[in-house]
Image (cartoon, rainbow, N blue to C red):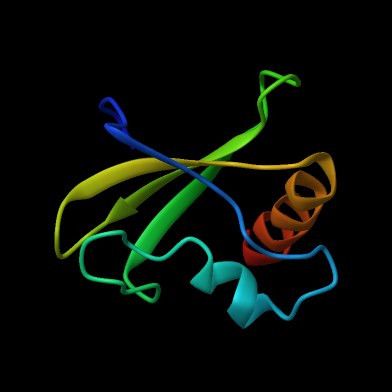
Length: 82
């Protein structure tokens, strides 16, 4: 995913929430879809871990900032998806 994120949000899930709630927290801010969102963990900067998101139907990009426990959870989901 290239391009600049124009929107930013804060993740709203607990580390022990089911996967469906984690992905719902990454839903598109315009159309509210979560199933068509491509996301990538951007953990290179340990001070502000975040997820870069792209809604394929809307072509909307945004960034969701994570707490350390949320970063770990998203990282585990990404590892299982790979």
